[in-house]
Image 1 (spheres, rainbow, N blue to C red):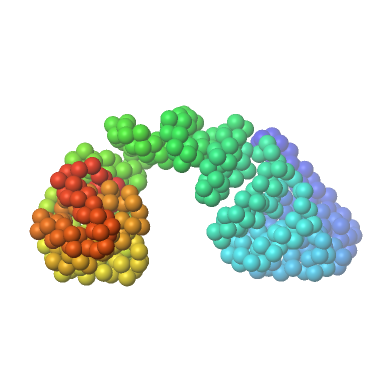
Image 2: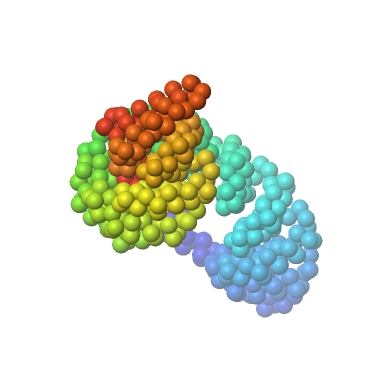
Length: 470
């Protein structure tokens, strides 16, 4: 609304109020004048005066349900939600088909986090006016479902809203976001691209499109989408963050570092950008710079788990194992049943030579999540170091059986924690296995461990590079 239009409307409302005051001066029982005066006061944001005038209209004419409905609106604007609810409940008791009262009841129940009655009232509104445009009831019901984590129900509501208002870019954007969370990436991409085409929040639409394209493995297109998001909103640090992550997936570390540095330029201290920058330095072996970034993240956000994991990983790589364990303890305090955290502590103790402690934490990890590959593997390595090669081979075999590619992610753990004596003991244990097929499988497994120990192909994991990089 322009200033001129707004000024004209205010003048019109003031004129209505003045006229109604003159009418009730002459006709003190003219309920309609009180009603119109209250509606105009409500329009001007003079809510307490509106309640008074509308209440007078209601006193004079008990059939004036619209006055009672508007009283509820005024109370809601005053954030007196209980009185607002009471007014609307009285309206729907007298007129169950009053769709607007059901709508506002649902909206206000949601504000009070009373989710079940909020859903009930919004559904009642939609039963009465399923085709209402703009489709506000569909949109608010979708928001309520999202607040309850009911993504599929939210999707249905947003698709109905989209069908009623196909040219509304925000609806396409919101639907794209929900589809993205549901893992329906092709549909999410289509909705995000339509939102961008319609010219709504173009930066957010391109960002969602980029996220969808990354999930679809279309990395070059994702980079282009993030670049368009940056063109639309050059100060959006999140777009730079995601652009860097797309570059990393393309193995372009230099471009990723540039993107994350730009994110920090537009949002100094941005924790996720600093974390990623530290991870990039870690990959390059620039441990002191990685430590600097991760310590900076933890100064801003002491509960940033990935930064703390990275910090411990870098300290472990530098051989500062006491400090690494010290940094790991807060993670353990916050997530005592997390198998990855327990396995990480087991590995740190193993690196330091505390084999008994390592076995203990490894067992805790397996108890926390039986069948968890990382927990089983670290326990197996700890048992191998403890000279219990039979149990060790069994635990490592279970880890690999769960995920055939898992072993390739454990290169750092193997190199740091399995010594020659443990490998030789595992080889002997494998040779004793029976039947012959089991012995062959065990021998192949131990040969792969030896290959990784010698520097064979594999990626890192554990409280070292892999975990630090998330």
